[in-house]
Length: 348
Image 1 (cartoon, rainbow, N blue to C red):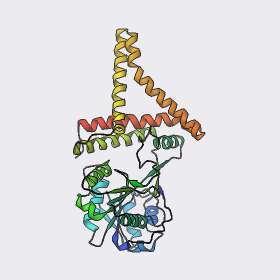
Image 2 (cartoon, one colour):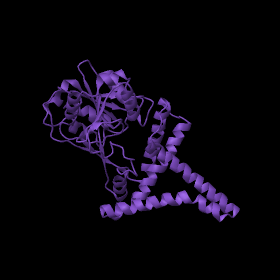
Image 3 (cartoon, rainbow, N blue to C red):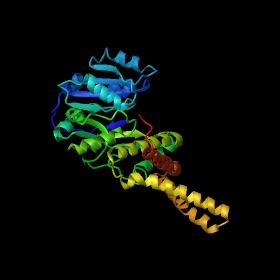
Image 4 (cartoon, rainbow, N blue to C red):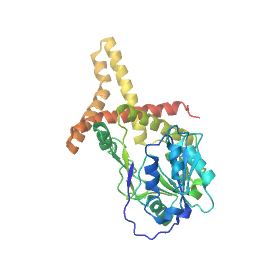
């Protein structure tokens, strides 16, 4: 992931001494050094910022790399995250490393590369706007044909359903976004992340934050490049987890899901019902039942086909033909995960 940082003319209002940067990590040897160097470059104030890598038990060279970098960056520390989850790791980092002088928590991803001064730009924005949290939008990217098609379609209403933090272009208050910076006082006040959540921990925290009166600001000019999963299987697994995580948040807080959140589950149920009805019709020799049962599946397949052609024409690339498969890999596992999460919570 790469972030694009605009030129900010507002005067610096936060010292590096007030900033705590937390990077959850697990087997990130390939990119952890580049990530940390990017986080610590571009602003003299970063020399005073504390950086904590919360390692979930890496079996590669992640820990050794961080330890070696500690000689160059004395305010870089490695702590253990025995629970392995990012949510628990960030909570542990705050509990072990945050001091009274820390004012801003910056959450970073170990596989991302950040522009110079990113953390301080977030801190300045957070304090300047007097909000509880600053989030950033994600612009999806891809390299291979499938990745590119998935990236093109996910930021459309058919993919993300119009989420502000998915390709949004307007700054302002939002309900949720990709976590970047948070006022530490607010983070502590609401109890941090729920450490039981492996996915959707950010949206769950955002719900509690807003319920407590905190404001979340989407900084549309601080943008993140997000690289989509490279295969149908990996994308499907990701969206299964997303769906289960969202359902868990809904169950925990007795929320009413939004239309864009329940649409994949409803679609899946209609597909299953239609397929079942068509099967019954086939066994009974009823052409009418077969036709009726096949109506919704046919309509959905048509939507996927149109989406593929749309992306191919819009981007002038045959890679766009993968868009339909990418949509199915997002819609169906998300819906199945959501229904699974509503029915049973297997996470501890």
